[in-house]
Length: 358
Image 1 (cartoon, rainbow, N blue to C red):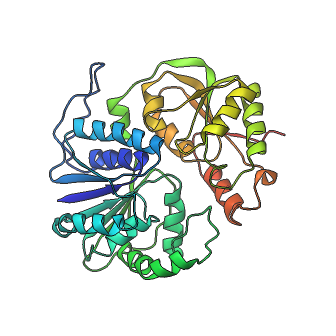
Image 2: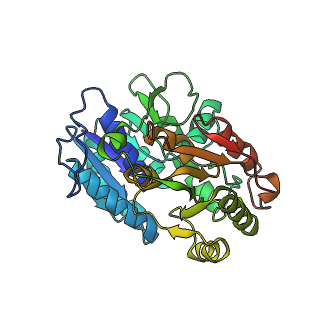
Image 3: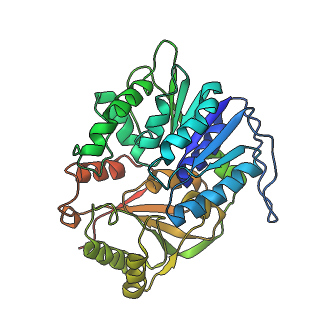
């Protein structure tokens, strides 16, 4: 049995892509009909456990993705994994029997303390890491350098919580390395250079392209939002000015909000830019593939500059990425932020590069 743990809509999408791309996978890729998707046979013995987050937007998108997964024939277990000090340990105890029975564990976020806690129970089982956006690039790089796992936008300070969880993180890093009894695979659309022994499988978004679209393409441009303000990386005033300039210069009409963007910031963007704010109910790769979508999709450095060209291959839609100017960064930004964001843009293929607006 294969057992997947996901905490975000994108992770669940990429579990579907991983199952579709596996050799001999029985998913036939029959396009969805307007009345609803066609139910297909699922990969034998694959169960997806949703470790549900607390924020409403993520939960809503995960509910919709869970519906799509069930329509494909997957077994999906919704786990209310948060909401109290004792909740994580209770959840781990409930999931332990499934972990022991599984032959392969599939995870979407190796930085997650929850996932790291579960990995301590894995032993010698095979592991697959599916994309959780650009974080996959940092994960593979840190693993190759033998560093501790720290998200790129955090400063890596060791507080009391980090010190308590240090043994868990250390053991999880060992589990994420291949051994004589354990194979480790990374299923990704990102450009990565893994350490020796780790297998990389390319995510081409074959399931997405076979099940949705081709989309209707509009004449204008659409703009993709980012949570760089919410994570303390980019100054909010600079961000609003940049969005306004991009919208003016490229005739953007709609702004597809990131699920973590705050309501206050989105309200300000609507008032000051005149853009129509869209709160997607699914990951943007599926929204764009379903359409309608602008002939040009504008984005700041983010996951979509790597994934949208794959999901929209053959449609004629152009993806353009705008650089982040150094003066946009806040004092709270990690020292690695500028270099990481430049790397996200610089390694993207099939995109147009745009300078940061003055």
